[in-house]
Length: 377
Picture 1 (cartoon, rainbow, N blue to C red):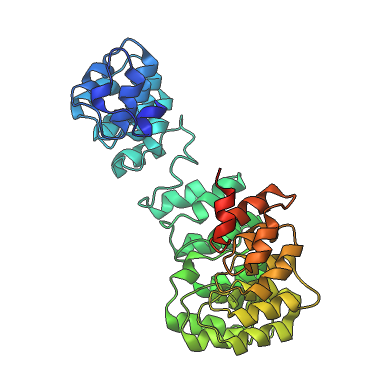
Picture 2 (tube, rainbow, N blue to C red):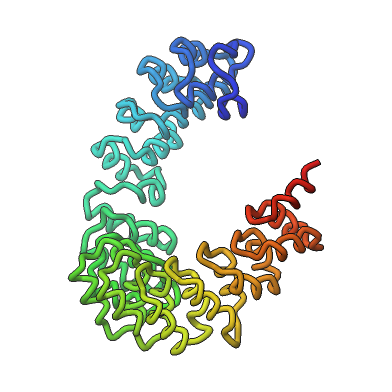
């Protein structure tokens, strides 16, 4: 099977009777022969039929055959993965495992899902958590679950409406409230309240990513540092908004905006002057940082190890900026690979006791040609 998935085998190489698993791998990739699925759907080995059942694009008659398989695990696999209308029929299957699998399938018709939701035999709390087309009353019932992870799954579902968003935003469990903040349509005023309650936990959020320029400007003027920090994480801010955040009084906001392209060297140096080690590595990560600025970063005292690594990997780093990076264990290998490193230094690193450093130096394009020739066996 690995050979088939890697493209080494083709349909012409495979005897379906001798290598059924390889044939299934090719069917799964859309490279099998048309007659194979019908042959394998009647295979005496239930595991082979089970594997076939998850393949996409099976002919309708093959899906129908698998949906009527005597092995319930085969039927369950069909119910979970097929895009065929057979799911409507399988929603009435006598085995609850099959009906749950139908509920997990995103392509099951809504009317079948609603019928399953009324089935007292089925624990559907997880099964419908990714459906975005359910009635709000059903979402409210499913989200009213004692398990906070289940409530969190529904809290981030784009299908839930404003009323349920507000209910879940008041949930006593922090992970549920964090999930509400990840909802793509959470109201901005509510998002601000959630962020203020838990400012240390936020990664870039969908609602912030989708905010309009006017909304971004409003959020950037928030009295809450965490809100401004979320705005500062965007890398497509209007220049005037980006520059305003660059001179924010809070280091966490400045740290977030520091890698933003387009910032002037004057602003980047001012960040370091005002906030020091708190922003040093992020300034070094700015794609527009000049060689002289990167030298300035490596001379800063106290230093920051992450800043040295950022400099070592920066395409604009100069030789003087790279030399201090060689003193750091983490920054030393990328510095050894940087073409701006002086040739004599690169040559000296070929004998470095750290084999990673020696290997990077050996592959450095600035290694003198004569030394390269000596390295060739």
